Length: 186
Image (tube, rainbow, N blue to C red; front, side, top):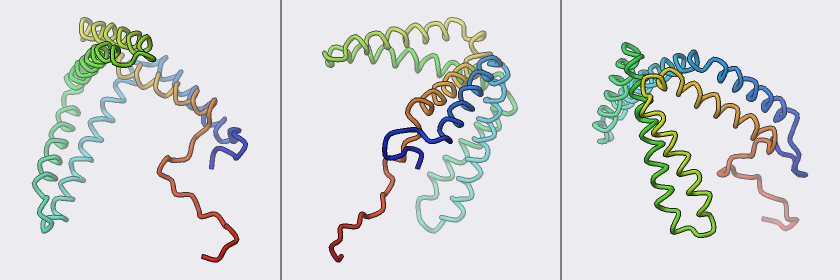
């Protein structure tokens, strides 16, 4: 367990948090390289995921749900091969999707803000920031393609490190805790 009963972080949490902060800063300092590494990682992950799904289809051929595994595996495999053979196109496509996601998320937050009076200013502010990010990415698609994935990876790693340093790692929410001894026979 990472968190002790009195709410303090363990030594491993502090070490992990520092390592994540340093890695996040290194990634941010080398955002273009991190973007290139990310696209190859995504490509290979899609290839491996596609192969695993196709193997599952063969193993489960008697179960009846084979077509969804075949279709999903084929799509992942083709996507992975496409990204690995055309990393620049993969980068532009993922950047386009990220920009569109920022834009849609921002518009949605602004639209929903009217229904949440107590958190309206937070939703409107984050919505405006998301819309601005989306527009910035979409207007500068080619330039953003070079750095966006690396920056997002660096920021996420940095935030994870700060979170672990501040709060420690929490046990999984679905974790089953051992039964407590009550003194009464079961």
